[in-house]
Length: 213
Image 1: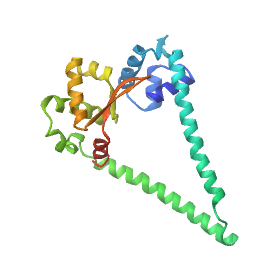
Image 2: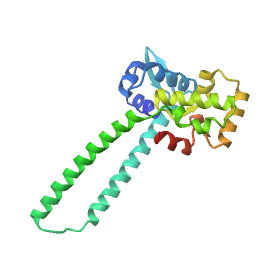
Image 3: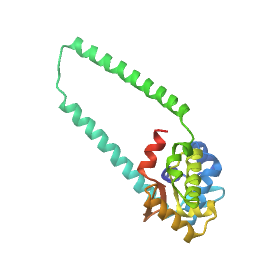
Image 4: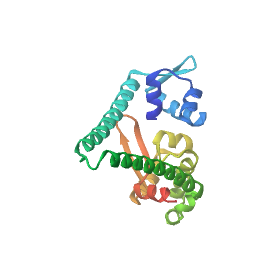
């Protein structure tokens, strides 16, 4: 959602353009656009999506937070550079530089290769969480599997309550009861975002299990 807001902050876009740029299917992006249109963050005109003043304000704050984060990272690196001690001869420095470059390249290749291997070896999320799902009642298990299916399809670890109600066609009282039960068992977290609404996501324990799956 933050990525969509940032893109629309740059210029109005069609749904297909947003999908193409972010690498998601159009129907997935459309579900978010429709949801945030109801929340008053954006509107559609002439086939393109525009931010409302509220949406522009939120997008600007997101961009600012990322900019500040980037600056802090660069500041840490800059201070580390100033604190390094100069050692060895010029030739030795060159050798050290080349060695560091070689190590960086090897590290990059290893990380890419490792990620591909791990990705190909990943199990079905429902299998990874079978020890948890076996202890749940039917309603809790249905909600968990629904969220796991979204995770498997889109890689998303959270959903907003309106989306869950729309897609699951659930009664709100029943849904909250089930979600509270899953929160008590530390499977999900419930968070009321003042700007974006009520969010439901996997707990840290569940995320770790999915990452190591």
